[in-house]
Image (cartoon, rainbow, N blue to C red; front, side, top):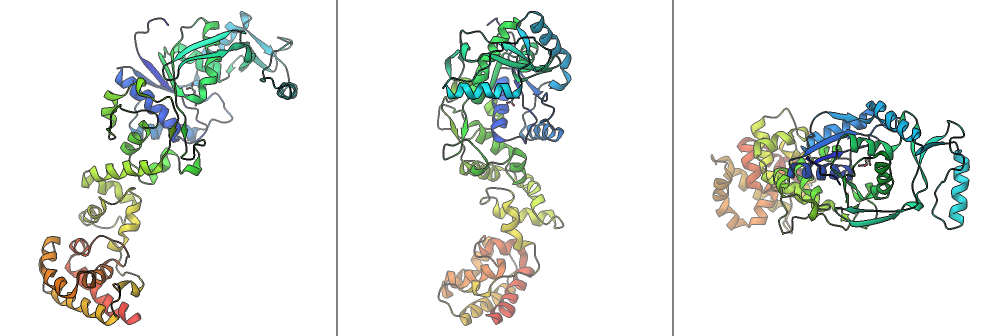
Length: 462
Ligand code: GLU
């Protein structure tokens, strides 16, 4: 390979579906490699397949790259706007006789393939009607020779060119197919390292033939390990994966997704698990990418998300929780509610369900829930009345002070016996933060109102 001055990598998604974890990881690794090496990270939208490419997917990719913080350098390149460049190279290959028209029909090719498969041969097409008519597609003949390249992750890889035959490179003089457009663009854009998913390894020998035919220098290649589900099958929705946008909607934080994704293939060489994007820009290297497949584990993603939620500044977290909460309520009140759950939640979207009792006027719960263990209803009522009496005379509703105020009572009547009915009266839930925490947020008036409601309505209803 000729000496390249600058590290330039590209992320080259096809806008034919929503931006998902696998594609986002490819973007991340390219981004990190560029940052680490003070290089450039190019975004190229591979939209030559007009039937399958859609604007909405392109928008989804761009918006979510931005959301993840993976900012590309310079303009966005669109293959659909580069027709003239491809045309020039298609002509070059046709003129030199390295490419030719093949007018074999779909049916003929299908038949040929079936026969080869029946004979246990690897299917390939070698056209015996080169340039008979300017119809069908434009093909390129791969020589029957060994192709080797040194993959920066997989090591030395060897392919038999003879198995490839005549590969399709363009639909017509203006419309390249993937293998040609990618080679032309990578060469024209002076891409130094092609970093992409392992599923593209089989395309690489075809591309190397094209680099050679066009007289281009070869870039370095690095193929990232596959991402599999926990059952070791190809990652799919079954494994709980959704698009990056959907993760965002569910309340996953970009920093958690970044940290999670980098471990889908990369390791730091020590026990460290927490890395910000900035730290990764320093730490990342291709040498530390595993050869073996990565396993997608949603619990790990939840763990990361919980970690970043706990670390977040409360004001910021509260703002991020607003879409999942009662927006009409006072921000300071919401902040107190969020603070109670900051340690517990794994996803922002959980906050709505967990804290809804803070935002409603009248709780709705099964009265039986008020009963602690083997208590009788009379005892429950009695204990709530004791609490009502005490709390109505209490001024300071801070957690600490409340705990102190009620300590003599809990000692006398039993912690569970007193605090379970109280907690349920305040929350209407089987599980919730403790009663002191809730009372501090609700304040005296609401607290007493809820206790009264429990005594009057709920207990009467049993
Ligand atoms: N558009 C191709 C894809 O989305 C890019 C492959 C490559 O990086 O060469 O898979």
